Image 1 (tube, rainbow, N blue to C red):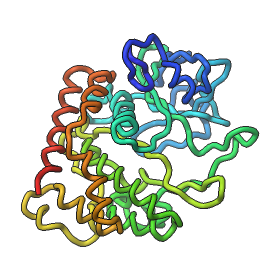
Image 2 (cartoon, one colour; image 1 turned 180 degrees about the vertical axis):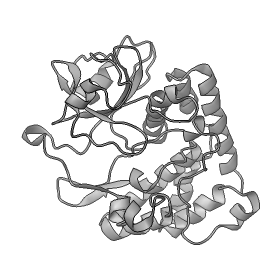
Image 3 (cartoon, one colour; image 1 turned 45 degrees about the vertical axis):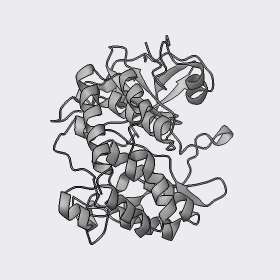
Length: 327
């Protein structure tokens, strides 16, 4: 078995490093003490999660560590768990493993800041994605949350004001403008944002919409981008998914896009310049997304996807690498 946290090979359960990052060093089983919810209305889950919100099509439940065991909770949740979603998409049983793998790729292969995460299993054997909350204050203020707003809130866009497609009728260029407006250290945060956009493209995540980017208040009182979240290869579940959830640019397309019909190196290079990143920095940030990364292949092979799903994941990755080398 591989570590259900970092995917390190030949581990019985969580490796020592993942135990430290996820559970402060405590030995916690990746098998939960309760069964998976067959429906969101299952009494056991309702009883323990009455105040937990549900966004999008994926149900999320709050859990905390009690006596070295993860348990459902209404208050003081330290983690979120996402079971297999319900919907008319392919390979939904692999959604937890997909998100877990993609988050590990972001962190390990591309050095993107993501919260500690893992794959866990309900008592009945069904998988779930586990992620540590980053909006909770530590110590005596553990029940208090840092102020956090996603970019739909920052842009003041809702389904009421802008229609049902409000999360998608926007552009990454416009998000960048909001970063510049609301975050003092925007020059640093802009490069982080740029890297996440590139990652979403290279890994075929076509659902990184407005609500999947957020700003959070730091201990010093200023605002920064949150760690990246909700990263997965959406092409695995929906082969006709768009390449990116939002357009790169607000009002235009590059000549390269007009020629090929999809984004290539030139689009991201122009986008980097457009959002204020120096040419030399843009080139340096893009470079790792143009090369086949051996660690990507290793982590895919070590993941909890089945062999057919791994092949699909790799095929999409190689296709995007090819595109990123077209100029």
